[in-house]
Length: 89
Image 1 (cartoon, rainbow, N blue to C red):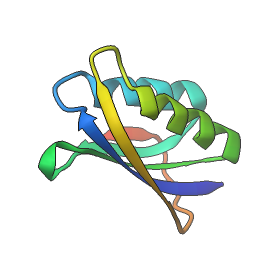
Image 2: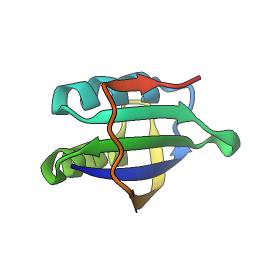
Image 3: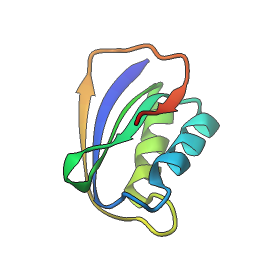
């Protein structure tokens, strides 16, 4: 398993981004969390195999219908284990 930290930039708050990302993560079997961060970004930690993470990151580049993603910063992290994919407040 691999773990990555994502910072998703653009118009990504208030557009159902976190809930849609949780649905996609559950569909792909990705574990971790997602939250809104200061500055209007969305931040996530995602763990899964290489294929799962590639598909999740690719989805994150588009996001849900009303999102306008301008950039994603992906940083590899030390492996972390999660029981599920959750939305943090």
